[in-house]
Image (cartoon, rainbow, N blue to C red; front, side, top):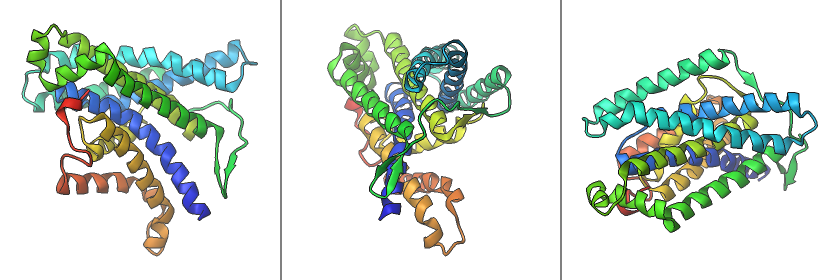
Length: 309
């Protein structure tokens, strides 16, 4: 039972990060019917920018509390990621909105490689370690433990997802996003500026990826220029699992995928008689993706066009 509780905690933490990134995928798809495969690299940019900010803070304000440093790093990483993602939309995707679907897909892969290359030039090839700024004393939950960084991650992810839902459901921009997703031409006739809506969608997705990137680095203690590929691919799997284009589906898919991966990693050794170990946990995301695409291509919650954002 202790192992089960521990793996559920780990799954919720991992799934929260997947959900934040999956929301970026599903929002862009909802508005543009485009899969932005460079979104995982936006997470990487957020992680590296956050580490750079932390390094500066340690030099100029060494006595600052760790949680304050971490929050400043997240706040500082958000505009960097927004700038990168908006630039990607303006330079790479805007001219391809009416192009055949293969063209934006190939462009997204090229943009991903380009972003990784620039990141390697700026931050180098070697992994960058996360500084020990947070207390290391864990919190006991039954027989399981959760670190203070993981608690903060869960709190931030919950706040971010609730904030996104409120923005989409209650604000004028959210209504414009939903209108553009449902019918861009009619939305334009009603006075909605589709370019502003699309830029806002990329900006919001980038902000969520920045939070996930910094917290991913804090949770796993290091980052490097190619780190965004696997989390991005898994987050895409989570978006498909929940129902691509559905923001609630992205949240559910991210949490569910994190739980599946964590529980699978905890019990795969017992289930296979020791043939496979926890290092094979990455296979679960892609096995789930294959199963969902085969049995229910629309995802668990389906693709509800009216709720796209």
